[in-house]
Length: 222
Image: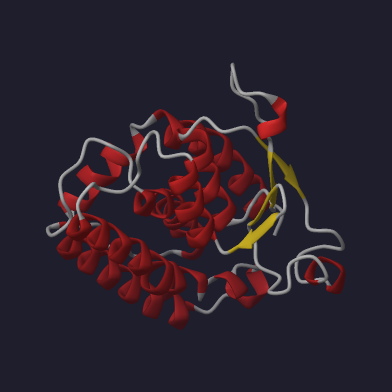
């Protein structure tokens, strides 16, 4: 259970999650940044189980329970919480700025993260594929270069944006898998500076301090 001073217990949100889930960690950054109170529950019966799908039809993680509302998909949850708890705002004030930040978030979920996820089935030692590692090293590096270009059109901000949350976690995964699989990733210099800015926000730093150890432990157990 996660509480902040001055937050009444009846405002407690429930989140179905797995500790190692990338998208659950993405959501926790938002929850931390907005100083919301939440409790985490493992999906009943396990991820993908019929029991859990009896609650969340899609079987998605994370899923949010807020009173009578059940909402799955990390982006939908993030948009909902940002509207319900607007301070601090995590989208720009102007329509174009909001559109560009949303575009960035979709790029993470549909381009960069899937390029990384292709490696997940090959993490066990007996399933590793050097050819796939080489192919995905190129694809991930290409996506990072595209991200650097996309960032040029995103309004400059000193605030943490919705789109930033997913990238913070995916970058940690890339770091972790680089020595494990022998990835060869080209990090654009401007992207490194942007990453450092994201990681300087307390909500991101706190989540990463906790998440990195969970990820390392999980990888060591493969």
